[in-house]
Image 1 (cartoon, rainbow, N blue to C red):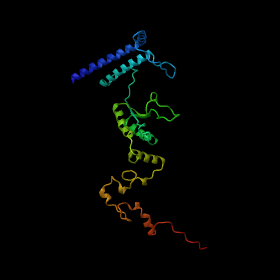
Image 2: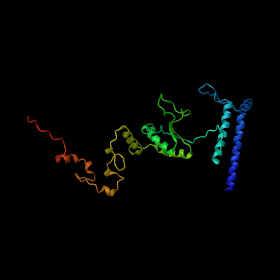
Image 3: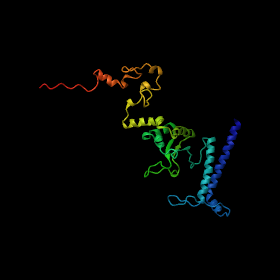
Length: 276
């Protein structure tokens, strides 16, 4: 353990030296760029590119600065892994862990991946964000309707994907676990996630009918007496008083006919005739 501690201290000291070296190189980047421009053996410059303000954004100085900053930030990240209480320079921005999950929209063009991820009124997305602690967004081509506010810069030409941003790698990995099952196409008849969303949507819209759903498991398509999660011994005790089949009497399709035969169903009796 002592050897390991000494080794870590040496690694931290080396990384700190690299950070200091980057600081010195940043201070002289203008002069270094001019000197590099005079070198006849320098590599060719890339074609110029310009930002929205019309200013060139890939000059030699900017390219060198970006390279030095990248080296510095990588060294700082290495220090923070070994010494979490290290105080980085004030202009250092901690890079948040991100994950990018591409949506197989080309392979399954008619499958509603976005609807499954977002959910009714965005509830599915909000639940996954709350459980994982991450920001979960849809980015890339087709993520924003025409005329709406465009996607985040840098994502305009990327393929449609789920962008996950967290504070820790553990949070980002948890969000991936929640999202991945929704990116695997499932037949609508067996897609339990979609059935739950439809039920939630019907509740939101006020069209939910409780009698359409089993009171035991909450799923649609069967009554309580046929619920696959019900104890088989209890299922055997249920017997319809009308037809004798193993279902509740109130659910019997012959119940209406039996009530009519007993004079307990059908149209109400006519009012007595006027004697006046």
